[in-house]
Length: 214
Image 1: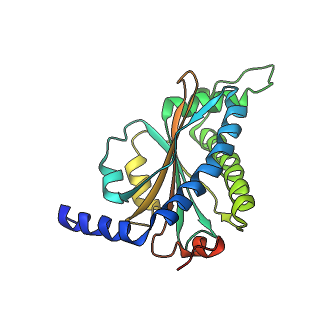
Image 2: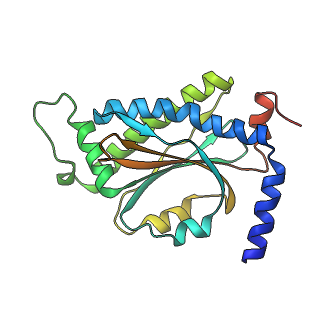
């Protein structure tokens, strides 16, 4: 897709979502992420700061071709918002390892260093953290918007240099809307991104649930 086609796609998206619907989608991200901040804070033992949700148009090819060296991530699908809603949680490898260390050593007398564990064990721990984050997120969303979402099993990218292939093989939507929220500890020792990607062609599932369908 060239720049002109990109511009047309983005213009069609802008027309499709009026200010009220755009605000509703941002609030969908905002409600859940505040609860995620609490969950991550409990895992890390630090106060978590979150950014205001930013809604933009995304292209899968841009995500794959961007500088993603040292990134790890989790991917999952969610039913109940659109026909295809996808979630990406992204952190640097160092930040993910630091979060995992805090998680497995919480209230533990004998400390374990995550880097000493196998990749399979590291993925398992990261997957458990992601499951806690997403369960917290969608519990809040369901309560606020009277939805019945259901999360798929998280897929994890934790090997060095595999992130682009991971995105290419997991992300179903080639383009669409992306609601992005960043989070960080108050000391900036941990930062990450939470991306909510509902299919713009079928997100009326969500709008109907909250009484905004055309």
